[in-house]
Every structure is written in C-alpha cells, then in structure tokens.
Length: 462
Image 1 (tube, rainbow, N blue to C red):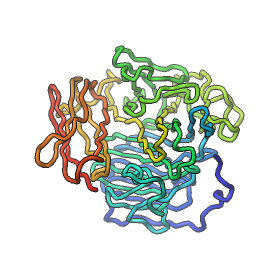
Image 2: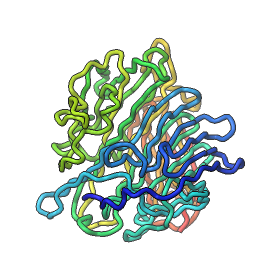
Image 3: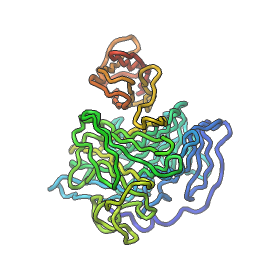
Image 4: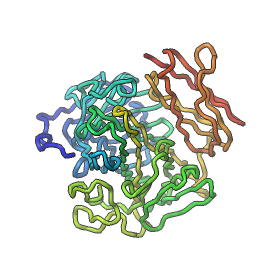
C-alpha cells in the first residue's frame, strides 16, 4: 500500500497563534511546521511541557504519527523523541492480501470541537473527540466521523489527552498520548478500518514505538528487565532484542539515568501481551544505542513488510540498528511493539493497545524500588468518561494481593464482574468495561482486595 505523490504537496499558508488564556493547557503552534507546536500543562505551574509534531510533518521516510519531542515532567527531561516510525500488518496465508508496510503521515478526518485558527489544532471539550475507532466501537461500519485533521487536546483535570487520526488506504490508525499529573504516560494506539477491502480477513497489526529516552538530559542511561515471577533482573550491557515470553511472567523494563536515579518503568498492557512474537513481528522490545540516522530500519522503501532492526543497514548505509554495540555510558533508545490480532469476519473491529510508562522516583541506594502509594492503591479515572460503548480503568496496588473489580449500577445492583486475579505490587493492570448491553446511566467500579478498597465512577451515554 503506497500513497499517491499528490499527498506530498504541502498545504498553503502558515498560521501562528496561541490558545486562549483561559485554557487549562497552553499551546502555541504553527501549522505545517516542524515541530508543529509547544504545549504546557497545566497552563499555570505546568507539570508537563513538550513539543509536538503533527503526522504530516513527523520524522522518518513514511512518517511516524503524532510525535512528541523534548518532553519534560516537573523539570526533568523524559523524551528527546517518542513516536511510531514503523507500522505494518500481516494477513493469514491464502486470503490474497499478503502484508503491508504502511505510511503514517496522512491524516484522516474526525470529530472535534474547539478547532483553532489554521484548523490543525483543537482545544476540545473532554469526551467529545470521536474518531473512526470510536464510531466503529459504537456499532458503526467505517467512515470518518468528522472533517478535522490535526491534533486535539482534551484536559480531564488530572489527565491531558492528545489525539490524532491517520489513514493508510482502508486502515484507520488512532494515536493518543495520555499525560498524567503524577508523571505517568500512556501512549495509546488503536487499529481500525474505514472500508472493508481485505479487513474482514484475519490479520495482525504491529506498531513499533521508538522511545528516545534522554532522562535528565545526561548519560549514561540503564535498562533493566524485571521478571517478577522468576525474581530476576537483567541489566543490558549490549544492544538486544527481547521478548516477554510467557505473558504470565509479567516481564517489564526500567529505564533510568544512573547519575540521578530518575527514570520510567515500561509495563506491557494486557492487550499487548495477547499476541506472541513470530518471524514477522520479530520482538517485543529492543534496546539500542542512540544514533540520529537510526529512525527506522531502512526497509520501508525496499518492499519489505516486516521490521528488521538487526540485518538491514540504515538509510545512510551504516550498520543495522541492533548490531551488538556496547550500551555502557551511552544514550539509549527503547523500541516497543504494540500489536493486535484482528479476527476475520469483523472488518470494523477496533483494537486498543499500548504500554504504561510509570515514573520511578529517584532512590539513591535502590534504583529498582517501587514508588510509594500512600493509600495502598491507585485507581485511575476511566477513559473515556463519559463513554459509549466501552471504557478502560487502570489500577495498581502497593502490595501484591488478590483483587476483584466489580461494576454496580446507580441502585447498587451488581451488573458485571470486571476482574478477578492476583496482582503484582506496583504494576498497572488495565480493565475494559463493556457497556454495550447496559442502559445509559452512572455506574461505580468497585475494587476490593485483601488490604485495599476503592471506587471510581463512570457514566454511560447512549
């Protein structure tokens, strides 16, 4: 699948403006520029500041979606760049659809209010942004729900959400960045479709995140792989490609600045763990030395669908991205695969994936120590909320224990069991709430464990 050359023609005119002073997020921007703009949230005493690049101007030979650059949390540099420079899909044999390496710099229209001058930025009312993925989940059959193209900002109070909607032929790729007041980041990716060509056959989508961590702006950074089931930790000294193996092991990774202790924990979502690696998808995570020429694997224009970091030279003719270079004392780039299996017979399916990036507080003597949870747990506000027909709730506990999540209606009647299982300490779990068979109304998600209890409210609107 290739885009026609006419898409490369730039839109006319540059618009520079600033969002109203009453906005909770302060954004300045220049449409069609790189970067597109700069955001600070909250507008007063900001916790998060970053530059962003709309998809048409994003880096890489085929774009990399809504790109985040120079992201700071509470004065600490987190990312130099974070984006998705490799995007591909593979169909089952015999269906006549083969595989594709997709472009990621063409925007699709979606619904958003609060559209600003220049029409590439929207300051939207929380909960009103709707993409093809949203309409398909609500029973739609493809189609684009609006004409806005660009980045929409929604301020939920303790969470800032950036949304963009891209297209590659019949595919629709929704990309969201969730920034939380406590330092967490949820890079969300959603796979869906706008027409049924080939998409009704079974296929597998893969989005490869490239997180150029530049923690506190200094080197060296260190990557640890933690296997909580085996009770082991691995510190990487050379470039590597990794898999989480058995999803039940709960493998995750820590990335830290070794001089300050500032860092992030990268925890795969339940959805990400559902699709195991194979010869096409290659890896679940990869750790590489930073090189400005290694934005992608060099295969995009060579007719090769699958990613290949360890044998294809980069575009400048240099060695492959992963070639056993030493990580000692180096700036490190972390690659992460988010994937989904799209079952045949449902061309309008929307699959939502993406890891949780959780802040690791600097601890001088124990860089793997978990962050404190004063109440013994954290249960997030659901997103989206209000919702239709589904939403997600994330939670974690300070001490490992058995946890149940139950859904109650406004009359206190239990209407659904959402989760029952053993939860590791300080690891986020994601629970999806399906409201397709429920009436509109306010519901309560109740979490009960051996040592904790908590609730959060959600609103279903049909």
